[in-house]
Amino acid sequence: MFDYIIIGAGFAGSVAAERLSTEANKKVLIIEKRNHIAGNCFDYKNENNILIHKYGPHLFHTSNQKVWDYLSNFTEWQIYHHKVLAFIDGQKVSVPFNINTLYKLFPTSIAKKLEEKLLENFPFNSKIPILELKQSNDADLSFLADFVYDKVFVNYTAKQWGMKPEDLDSAVTARVPLFIGKDDRYFNDTFQAVPKHGYTKLFENLLDNKNIKIMLNTDSKEVMNIKNEKFYLFGNEFNGKIIYTGQIDELFDYRFGELPYRSVEMKFETVEKDYFQEAATVNYPNDYTFTRITEFKHIHPVNSSKTTILKEYPQQHIQNKTTPYYPIFTEENQLKYQQYKEYSKQFTNLILLGRLAEYKYYDMDDIIERVLEVIGEIK
Ligand code: UDP
Image (cartoon, rainbow, N blue to C red; front, top):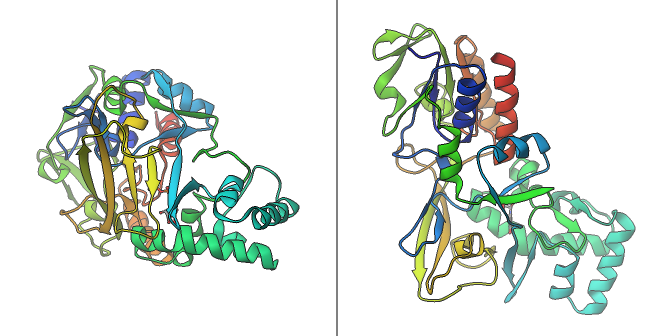
């Protein structure tokens, strides 16, 4: 009946389903644990008409023309340039740390000296990861690196990951480098926008195909099982292909142990104010136990005398209790993942895609690019 079973209706699963059903006329069954599509991009309008990102802020940004063009088939866009402030020493300053931030936090003479030093050493508009700047032998740059490390990174990373920046893969903190320029935006990508009518609508459009059937509220283990390296759907051997986008350790019953993830508790509050804060997101590296507050009205402006904010409290992930948001990027965990990956190779009809199945910190555009590539090859 089905050519493909896809587990998970986030970007990985939904883009795969769209490509296979539209381009290759394949019949696809999507099995989704939650009671909704769109994975962690799921959004909805609350009672005040404010569009809420249920699983935390998702701001679309890419420099990949192909990905942008592809998604543009399924949504209109609302141009949106994300700005983040960080509450540091009693002030709210731009993050990524940039030349404007220097002038806000230091007396002009010191800021000027640091700016000159930065520009002597790095091209204007370049990006330097904090851990790289920390290697500098120059006394002024080393002072700056220690300052930014202490004020912006070390405590935020302790809250978010329960670790020091150095103990994580360097790519994690490199996502938010120092910016040797005066652009206050969080991202520098060519395309920056949010789906005009929300992500959920975009996903509805992706999945709107008679070749796609969706089972919500269904854990794949309820309807599928593995025996002798073969997959069974409702007790019958399934000879089509399986695209699995859930946790790889869960799929294989944790046979090599649990892969650790970081979770976040999302606490929403609605306040009787037009606006709560000056920017969409304010990070609190050093204060409180949440990492950041996001105010959704800044992302999708709406006429309401109330506003809804989200405080993110990072927490350890507990299997079947919390949502696994972030693979924890350490060498040890990568090795464990490799064991699962190796083991998965004996399942010749299994394709692993996405943050959880590939144990990889994909951004939205990266996973879409990957799915377009992988599906392009197997069709
Ligand atoms: N980070 C930090 N301070 C900040 C912002 C980011 O230390 O003010 C570090 C932290 O380790 C975080 C990583 O940079 O996990 C990546 O941040 P990003 O905003 O990209 O995280 P996401 O939006 O994916 O949650």
